[in-house]
Image (cartoon, rainbow, N blue to C red; front, side, top):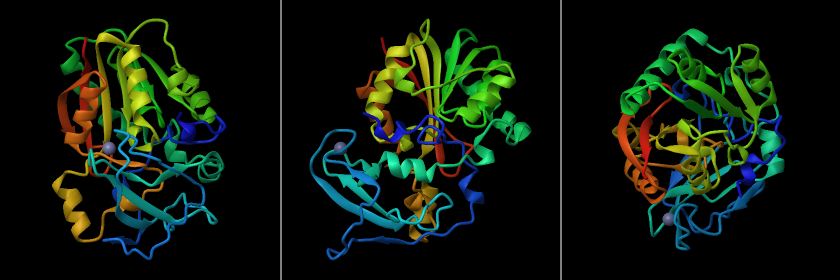
Length: 303
Ligand SMILES: [Zn+2]
């Protein structure tokens, strides 16, 4: 389970997700749709999915091809092909495979400064404050522990603490954990599935995490286990159902098809459906100010 995140804890991987707004990333990508039968996918570095990672459906069709060769984190020798599949049963869109440990170690072999605590502390603080305020409106109070999975630059943890939550952060990058501890925030180098809090959590946030995770369902199941009965799950990720996504697709400018860190494209509807099957009810929807084309969904744990 979760092989994409089992590389050495000191190496960034699927949980190190703080990126600059993709709108500012000046990289190009190539894209083709309507796949030609002659294309032979190069799978170097990837473990192919045998079935749909959300519904286990076996009928998988080619959806789109792109290249990640121009992605800033691409490393020569790995396959540059981003081959996107679609499940015939649930319509989920995902890459044909996920990076193996060796590839992850190469791709995430060094940390970018913007992925570490201390990056843009003022700007990140105000954006994170809005995220925390939305959660508080849904929760109705400020009480208990907020766990942020893949805390990156730490801004969301800092804001949650500032508003009065007890906060804990998880990240697989040792440097990030050491840095945020210097400023008095509890943090651990740990896989989320291995984390067991001393008491149920009120909030778990996964900001731009789920699309990086090879198998999202076990992650949602663990979140369900750790939350208090009325606890909230805060998720953000790109929304492939939004107008801007379609427009950028039409004009060949959508960078997410070449995003080598992503394995999934979710839309609001598919995400909310997935949450329902895992014991959550989406109770709030909004547009993310943090990242390009992203949505924010707050879900309540069902009893
Ligand atoms: Zn499916």
